[in-house]
Image 1 (spheres, helix red, strand yellow):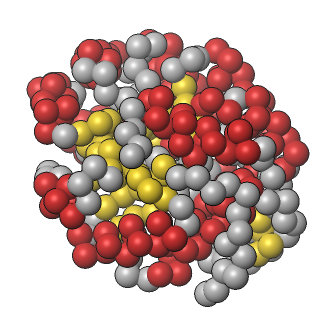
Image 2 (cartoon, rainbow, N blue to C red; image 1 turned 180 degrees about the vertical axis):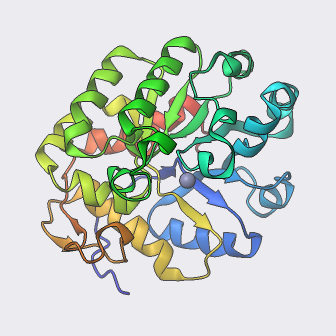
Length: 315
Ligand SMILES: [Zn+2]
């Protein structure tokens, strides 16, 4: 794959607010390709117990997110996590990642999976607030998933229901800073008004732009509307790729970075997504329509908003 046009509108440093590491060997490629597309620093969601190897390789480059296993939270309750959270700052973490996706009810009995607004979790969110640890949280999933794999609402609940539960949590834990993944799961054009309402109502709500294909597929259906929502709430939106340092495929990383930069910075129309979107295979494919955001909005999304929350040091 070749991207001849790397002449983007924005030429400052970029902070990637949503990325994962699985394989240490892949981290070098992840960093290299990120840099080619302007990414100087990232949040790194860590799925192991140790960050020392990453920090040794790239001192100061990452803000580490502790992945709080849903499995453990749901089977053991939040009690063991309370002590863990109290140590995180010392251990070098800057935030935690939580995943409340409908599929947990496949792996555990439905009764054992409390919703995110359950009082069971109150002490956990209290400790997070006390230690000033923001939460990167995944709620629900794309509408396309609810049409297919989650079509059985008795098992999985409804998407509106999951978003409401999260709204209750925003209310109950007003002192916790939330970064909701994947545009708050509300990139679909018919959900943008609700997201805008939530921004107005909850000053502790932020979203990231992770999942290049989800953003391209949905925001690209109504670029003018999406543009307005982003400009009106530009203090709450953080750039993120959801790249996972596991792949050794250059195209994997390039496709995500380039797609997002095209979405935010250009006014292109109907450019095919440079990789496969499983959700539109056989249904017409996914196309990029750029939002052509103003430079001051890009500066906030790419760096300033993350700096406000995570206190990045740029030197
Ligand atoms: Zn992710």
